[in-house]
Length: 241
Length: 218
Image (cartoon, rainbow over all chains, first blue to last red; front, side, top):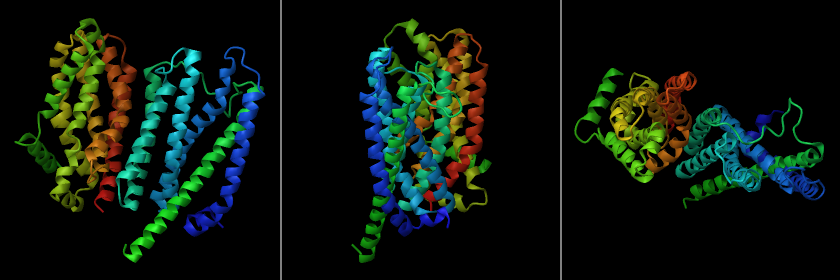
């Protein structure tokens, strides 16, 4: 029994079919609990007032925007090294989700920034690097669309994803160098003590779990429809349509 | 490799090769930018290093889609694929030829354009020198993009969308070097980072570009 067995589309289909309702249901539950708890049962922050509550959307979506790209990178590497089609399709399915997560993070950030910083947009390293990440996502998506041969498209986008990752990290540090930040430091980290008070922290964990599961469910769903599309194309080709 | 380099250089410089268009483009864009901003010479002088860098970067991108496309159309790229030299070297030679015909003249002409923008005295040297150091990276990154979009419809358009975000780090360090240089401040850190970026791009990207070319020629 190894993980690679699920590179077989049939096995992947069976497993993902069983996982999908659970992931989707749990995601909905976590999001409901996290957002409801966060919006209605936490006090207003003494400085930020009720605007603090956008944290329950902003932080998880920003987190997933980066993790989605990272997942695409891993999937691209698996595709290039081991040629598992499911992996390439999973990377393809993750890209639109990641793009939307980036967009949500940017938009919620702007909505929060307007009353707090007095501006919708600041040329802050974090904001700027998210904008660049968004451009990378768009480029990746366009690349998938413009190549017709699916295997070639998977190869090209995989290389693009790897090179793009290197340049995304470079840009992140270059932008850091370019301008000092207005954005606060990381809200969450594994090794340091947390910067968010417990009242806000607990519902945030639910919201993050909800976003992670949502991403997982959407990627499963997307990969399944990509596999179905592939099968339909194969059937059409066999029948000579 | 030298034969390939001289072939590419000849093809570009002789009639119909488009040599000089990049410089002309560079010149016109800086002019347009000045028109767009207005004749406030204080302001122009202040933003000159960054503006020149952005214009040079756009000019660099201009001839990029021709890098492999012409050889792809007439089939010589297929021959280069089976040639006794590695494809990585081919990519490197072609990017070098692109740099010699685009990046190098662009960098050398910036002092002239600096007069229009009333660059501070030290700025002439540093804008020119930072472009000299940074443009090889731009050519190499562009070559990767050109390899990626080879043979696609609307490849040229896609090329700029893909490549421009990849130019961000080079632009940041390059413009920072010229800005600090023009103001006479200490520029060691961004300058070293710019050099590192160029060397890294020159040593690693040929592999990525060659891999992509092989996929595209399959």
